[in-house]
Length: 518
Image (tube, rainbow, N blue to C red; front, side, top):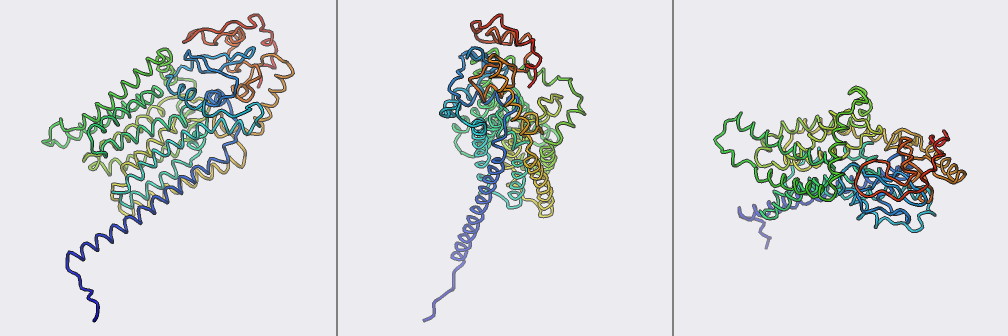
């Protein structure tokens, strides 16, 4: 008797539904696999640069995060190593909020404690120095991955393809690659703080529990409030801008919906978290917190270079950010109706990234030539794209155009990285220097230190690589150097007590002009 293959309407509907779910699951798994492969490639791209010799302030931050077995930090809010006299480290206040420094010294430093540090090769010491910051970047990358994967359940394929291409450009460009392995606050630490904040904001609307939503939003503000002053101020500016856009839309469209149904609760909870975070940061170390604001004002009003000169210096590094920002404006305009229909958290991430980038772009601070402070901006922007873009259905011509633009950008960024690696140039502080020449300079400095057998004027990196040698940071003025030789902090004011005096009358080394060279 032949088997009956006839099915009723409901049976056919169930089978079709199960087939569709199976197809969606396969597509979702494929997308996750592509994402994991992408992130694995992102980490592999950094390996050729992980042994690049440290330059400038990178040595100072390396001392903060790697325990050399000799240097111990005081409990006085002084984290900036300016010299070492008679085996005693001389510190000064960093003039930035203390919590990120405490995270480095109290959390990372005990973990990154190599045995027999003095016996390690120069290359091994460099890898140890960069490892804590790469680890923090990877943790930030995990937050970005969770946001991206979360969007798969409701994603349109066109939007997800664009997000993957944006991740490729955003994560493999020279600025982000160099910042992610650079011992500095703005790289790995900034990415960790700000992507975790972005993830908490993203998931606050997706847990379905009011109490948990409150905790995530307050926690988001708290984490950023404990960071550098500008991170929290930019988040506050992003919140105000987002609410202002929503209010303006209500006024223009003249809808009958009351203003009370705007996301005031989200706004107030994140602001509350920011206030608590800033208050805690101030309570932990009032002096460094207040002077962090002063540093912001000083750098923001810097007139050492003109805007044209600063742009000429930054453009080779920040062009991927400018490209992403341009596409972001298009995305906001295209997806504005969706942002109004309950995507306030995505809107906040967009406006936060815009305020961060706007503040940095308007300043004329050039720093050491490597604009690492734009790295967290790119990461927040990628979080915003991953949070919102997959939920918008894009027409294929538009999708192909954006994918092509991002693919070309990714190719150019990759070629730039290859060129830097082949030429063996620095990818971090004072970019473009010859790595071989920097190693030669460091060897010369060590020879001079051994020959003179007294404190010499040297870079911060010398203090990290050779913790047993005495030195005075070459960035100091002669008067500040004399203070260090006296066993005092080079900064006349600041938190904590001064060290007892050492060699108070020994300033003869300052008369040797060769000690001013590095």
